[in-house]
Amino acid sequence: MELPIRPRARAVVWTPARVAHWQATGTRPAMAIWTPHQLAAFLHVARGDRLRALWWLMALRGLRRGEAVALRWTDLDLDTREAWICRARTSAGYRVHEGPPKTAAGTRTIALDKKTVAVLRRHTRRQQAEQAATRAASRPWYESGYVFTRPDGSPLHPDYVSQRFRLLVVRSGLPPIRLHDLRHGAATLAHTADADLKTVQDQLGHASIGITADLYTNVLPATQHQAAEATARLLRHAADPRRAKTGRKRRRG
Image 1 (cartoon, one colour):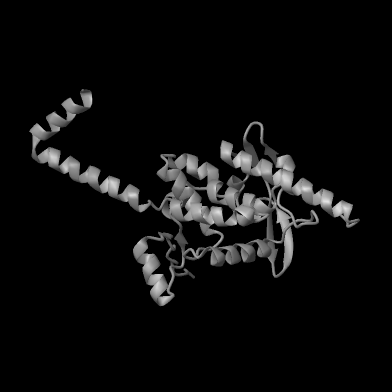
Image 2 (cartoon, rainbow, N blue to C red):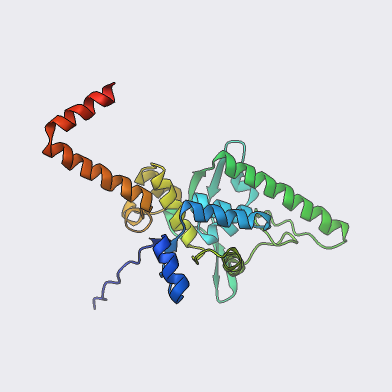
């Protein structure tokens, strides 16, 4: 028996027109990503949240939810600016299971930029302060070893992370996205910043570069406009060879 092919959903960018339509009707796309400006606004709103480093890491490096909450301090090397993604925490019902990432390619090393390292170092100090305050109050602290924990040091439940993110999005007043859409946005940002598809594939841990190309490389509107102008310019030069020669002379000069 051959099952019907299920079309893959594609994320769309929250352009001003889509935001206006959502505000007027309450209708939202199934998958949507923020523009860089909108993402920056969210991270600014979440700057005081105790899980800000988690949102930052997912938004810039594209970790899956389960990979982020399973990250341990032993998986991080902030001096060399690298993170080793080797496990994931997933939930079935409300029970949590920890195991390898979604695919074999999901086990990977990702590079961290200097700003992300700074955010993680601040998170380290916050966690140390929570540990000291908990012990000073004669309450138990769980040495779980996870980077992102509850205030008592125990690991986070994946569903709690999604619920917390939804609450912050509502507070921000930004158009809604799902937590997993941060991963779509991270891929789009990387590709727009001239990262090639192979680099984006390795960053996200995809088994196939086709998945990366099909789902996670939505081009932001500004880049679309640049491509459109470049295409039209090529046609103008083909129609007027003298203009093409003039353009080449200017570039040489």
